[in-house]
Amino acid sequence: MPEVIIVDEIGTAAEALACRSIAQRGVMLIATAHGQQLENILKNPTLSDLAIVPSKGLELKL
Image (cartoon, rainbow, N blue to C red; front, side):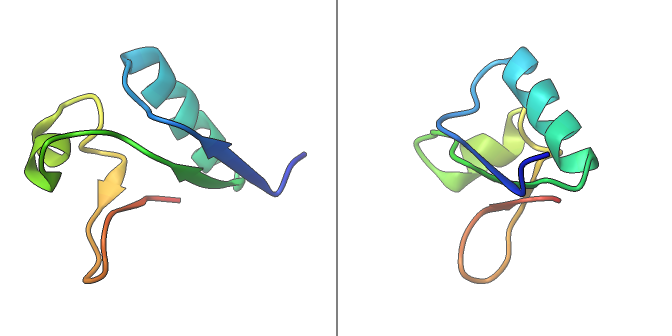
């Protein structure tokens, strides 16, 4: 099993579901998601439950 998976631009519900599955298996996930502002990503129901916002930027929950 890989230790890290990198995903460029999570945008669809299927991609978000795959990322949730990866993270739930203990694999480190590094991913991007595009939006005009951080608030756009946090208000997006497909992405919002994946994101946490520490003081230095956006990271995905692991």
